[in-house]
Length: 161
Image (cartoon, rainbow, N blue to C red; front, side, top):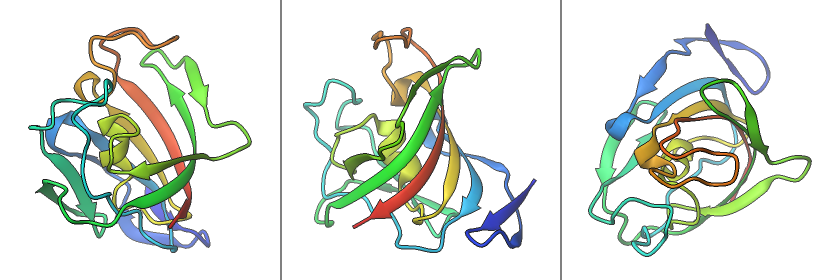
């Protein structure tokens, strides 16, 4: 599989699945050319959907480099994206629909797999993100999502400001 930029031109880099710490997997489908999604200033330890605050937050820079980050002192970043969520059996359980989903990246408004999986992505880009249970909902059931589920997201970043 080859990567494509926003204009459809092929990249020489293969769209291999990259496994990040804690089992998060990312596959670039299209590399965007717009502003980059940057993590917020901290991760809330009070969110019921997150791991403890002692777990490092993972940042992806320049689509390749991964580093641990404590999250102190960075500017918050509002992002908007379209997404489809499927379970391991392929069943679609959620999507953004016609209106993009908006949240502040890196401040615990979404599951850690999303905070980490969208970090470093550019507007116009598309990713396939595989979120293991410990970075998703863990042992909790959430609507149609059974406990301890691996989550399969297809995400398109439409705005970052």
